[in-house]
Image 1 (cartoon, helix red, strand yellow):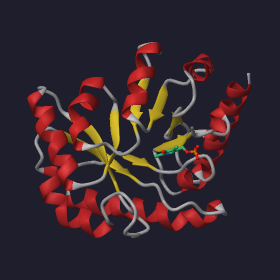
Image 2 (cartoon, protein in one colour):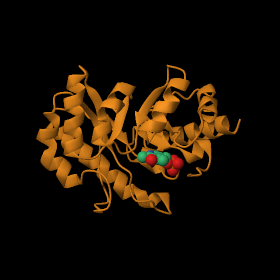
Image 3 (cartoon, protein in one colour):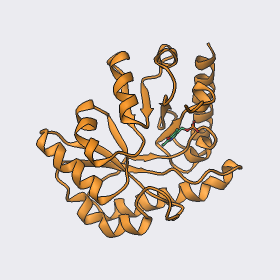
Image 4 (cartoon, protein in one colour):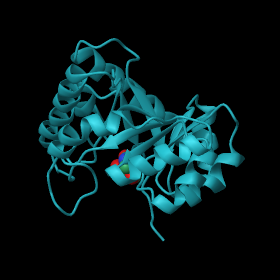
Length: 229
Ligand SMILES: *Cc1c(COP(=O)(O)O)cnc(C)c1O
């Protein structure tokens, strides 16, 4: 029951944020981040109408995905090692969200080609510019853009970011706006329409929606507090 109620509350908050931003109701997809939570919990979300789920570890996703109804869509939102790309592509994610380097993008394209497919991905952008973080810097994406769009077996659907945690959700706004503006500049260069902006988590998804998110990744606000082993 608890999970259903949380989901309903979040859907309502998303709709309110869409309205505040003058965006069409339903323009934002809610990705339920189910990492660390058991299939029983994910089934509760499913029973409440949720179909889009995100996992951050490939191994964990591979265990859970076959246990869930086949009309679910799964996104891989965590870092992907290059030696696991083939496994990840064979697993059938709707979107690989955290492609954080040119090397990884090139590997995904090459292996997708070998598998006779085209891989849908997002580029992870380090909007804070901290060295310690994953992702392309804004400058790198702009420098490498021609090279990235030339990769033949990749469909770059958009950008994602995981900004440094902030206490006040409003303080995440500049990072979200930075990702949106980068997407606008890249769209202007062509040839991709980059429909997706994946940004915002439990704490700050409403602000992300106001700044143009099309996918919000919400875990603990749906499933409860995570206990890491
Ligand atoms: C865990 C995780 C989330 C969800 O975080 P919550 O704060 O629990 O909503 C979103 N995005 C990524 C990449 C994550 O790893």
